[in-house]
Length: 137
Image (cartoon, rainbow, N blue to C red; front, side, top):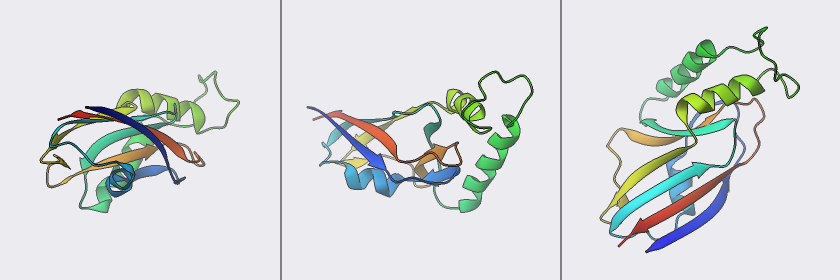
């Protein structure tokens, strides 16, 4: 069985946002065994899996990436879309636009402390389109 759906997540401010519940709410019934692949259709937002319990982790991740890839560097050529745009592209290349999660017993087989993050790297990124591809039996 293969299914694919596309949906949008609401706009969020810059940061690392736990979106596991939002993602699950958009999914059709999951197979007993399979895989869920999620892909964000943007070049300034990413998806990753990380800590789902302590919100300080999400704050720290934002701080780490803002220090790792700074805004306004004098060597940036791509500057016409704002100070946050080129760093957003670089951050997405580091994290990536997609995640794949196993499905077991009709549920996402995430670890107890794992959640799906939308990594929003623009100050005003807008709604983010997600393609969810489900395969399984």
